[in-house]
Image 1 (tube, helix red, strand yellow):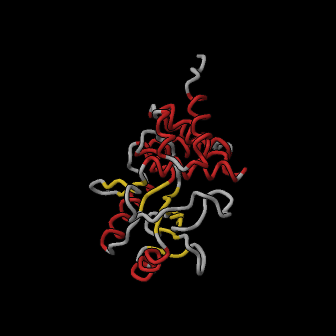
Image 2: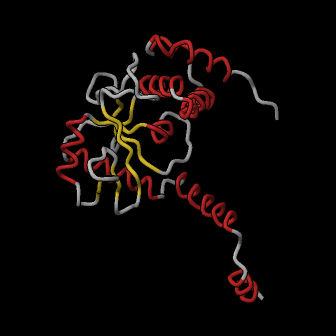
Image 3: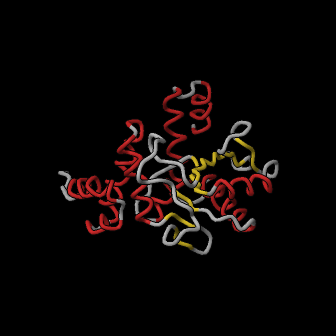
Length: 217
């Protein structure tokens, strides 16, 4: 009976949207179990960067997870200096990594099929225009936290960058949502505002107040 059902299912496949839904469920399970291709790519990248002695920080969704708010992502966000990126490319292009397109700062892990989105020290988040908050040097004081396998952007710098991004780029509103959820899930203190650049403090306090409202079940 089971074989007959399987044959019938194969002959009448699920609609495309349902196939996408099931793939998303499978990917989510592997991601949160830390068994997926994104985690493998992040581990491999951290190992290569350490071997090349390139200062770096993992940022984006994976850094959010390190600080207490887990959400899925399909890529690895990496902060390096322009010099560090050049050194990494010289040692690794054609050896498991390729440029997203010729001359791009972004990379692709060919073994795991994962995109590496690269952020460069000195550039500006959000709309890319000059502002008080810029991407810091990962070798700078209090910019990163170092674990056994990864170097992650420190909490104040991560929040600061996401706020500056969401405040200046309408297409980056999810960065503000990330801060809101991080405040709620990780129970961040309102006093964290004092560690942020003055240009984003009021927005942090606004989101902190919003996070204190309990959702009705």
